[in-house]
Length: 567
Image (cartoon, rainbow, N blue to C red):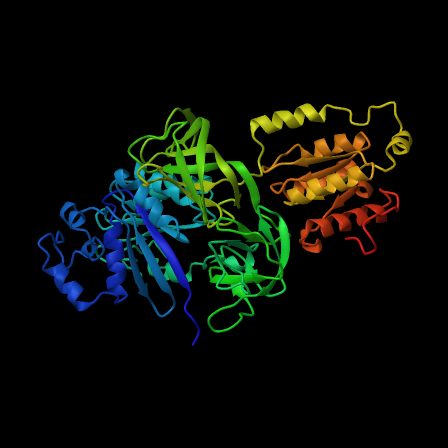
């Protein structure tokens, strides 16, 4: 029997738009409500329905919610149809509980945005759509509720769609549908209604059943944040954690960050024996062929597609505390399995949910959203949130009260900020080849040709290689850092133009920067080191790189490292 696909979705919208009533109706129509629950709701003293049942009471579980008639906390509900399984996050609509809405939507694959046909698009409808977009939810179903109170007039439905559709497009949703419903009466919820003959689309439940499933995380680059190192005795060393993305098999190459050392997977042990394969989001233990110095907070990653490594990055933050966020406020940042101290740089940029414009501000108040530049005490190993929710998200914690005060989504670091752009423009005006010395004269003096050795995250190896080459009389220099930099190709080109061997070790640099450096220096003088082909030991890896420099004709063939092949 085939396994049913699971769809996680959340409700969003303004207060009293009918989110809890809609979910109660879905549960009722799909027969996911027990008889004793129905009896309890029918006999409830706060039953506000003039009909047979107040469906909102099936989800509003807190006593304060039932008394006030609003949703305060996030309510998770589970139900299934013959076609699919569902997990619903019923989130609050009131602005005061925006932080709860962000929490409930953080794991959703689809957002059901409700809009009251009588009241039209409200500020909270815009706010929740904005948060859903920031949280990486790609699809939206916009349910125009209470159409029975609007006489099922098509012009009311079309006016709301004309106002709200451009916002969805601007927010970056990939797919959306509008549907007229009455959650209280059940029209177009589980079955299609004849009250709106002008609507020829599917019911809400049919749209949910046919919505594409979430993208498979096992197809993404491998990421394993290490949570614990298992050492039951001296014969076993295993690195345990939950796979954040990708697939792992025995024999695969992995790189340990931040050390940059590589190894191969020896085994994936489990209670039932060694596994032939592990995929996200499994929790596993990994044995490697080499005993690497790895501890909690480190990460095992695919060496061919590394995450960004940096102490400074930009992120959208939903502020969740009564005391505002100001630059200089100390915070702890919890990202995957590591916790670091974080500081915030001016200016803070507040996001206006109505205009979607960013304006400079001195503080972020409760429930406000801002784009912040954050600096951490240690490097983070991260992907953009839209590429990987697990490695692209974090929470902010008050160091005194240990209360969660914010949640963040890391932006794609591919764009250049103003400072880097200015640096690039300044360097681009330099004439790197402007010299009265010829390459032959430089070779006569140095005894080698210029080159750029492009390493990944192996900083210790970079410095050891520098020492080895310097000992052979080479003019050599290391360019290393923990953060990504958009001017590394120009710096490497400058050193090569001076006849030197430049060793670049910056793990946060992407493939585009590497390609630009190769074009600037020339393919014959550019050596990109593939981490999975290097020995995990620095001495052996340095020997391999030197042999490769000899093979390329950059160094004279006077190797003092012994025989053996290059890279």
